[in-house]
Amino acid sequence: MPTIAILGSGAVGALLGAALARGGADPVLVTREETAALLARAGLRVDSPLLGDHHVRVRVAARLDDEADALVVAVKAPHLPAALQRIRAEPGVVVPLLNGTEHMAALRARFGDRVVAGVVRVQAHRDGPAHVVHRSPMLSVAVAAPGAPALTDALRAAGVEVATGAPEADVLWGKLTRLAGLALATTAADAPLGDVRADAEAVAREVAAIAAAEGAAVGAEAVVAELRALPDAASSSLRADVGAGRADHELDAIGGAVLRAGARHGLPMPRTAALVAQVETRAVAR
Image (cartoon, rainbow, N blue to C red):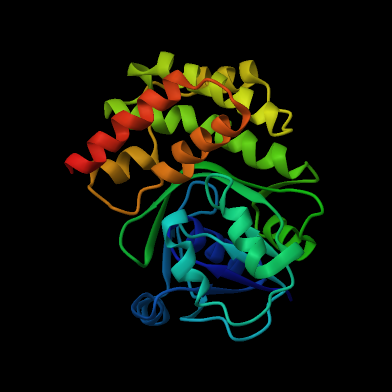
């Protein structure tokens, strides 16, 4: 039975931890002391159209002192430096599921070549520290080459869709190209996708050009087609975070990373830059 440590007990970390526990793996959620104590008492309640509504007990710890076959990093980018202080052991492989691209350098500075890029696609939120609401049947994880078999085998056994083998640039920039347009457009206007599709598509095209310069095989029109297939009511966690006045939003990890990469390659990003500025104004006003 593989031991899978998950750093972070937010919606993604808790949902994956619950799925792995039901699938027969040995997950441990590494989280803040007060959250670990609460989860140890109450367990996790999960509402999910994919995994079913259930209550499950998952091992929890305030720090990881023991060996693990894999470490999944499922915290938001602003929390990464502090969260890593909870990891005392040296896991076999480290798979971050953060948004953006720049976290890879920080993780490799700590764990070296054991870091393998990953991304997750899911719509979920926490309704309190011990309750995860998974809003749609979509839950998929992509892990770049060279892979992390202990993790991906356990996820598949738990009913999670897993893709493996793609180059790192394709995995990271594929998600960021899809995410940036949706997140920046909906957050800048504080509106659902149906009201801001032109902005979202313009950003997707700008980011796809940067992705190509970064060596990723990301087709702009394929991403635009994905955006067009989303319902008018689609929104983003960035919009929710900024709207709620949360300081730990991921604007820099998403929009900032795109602007910095574009600047490195000398690529114009007028729509992206304008939307990032609008989101910054909204965030400061909060």
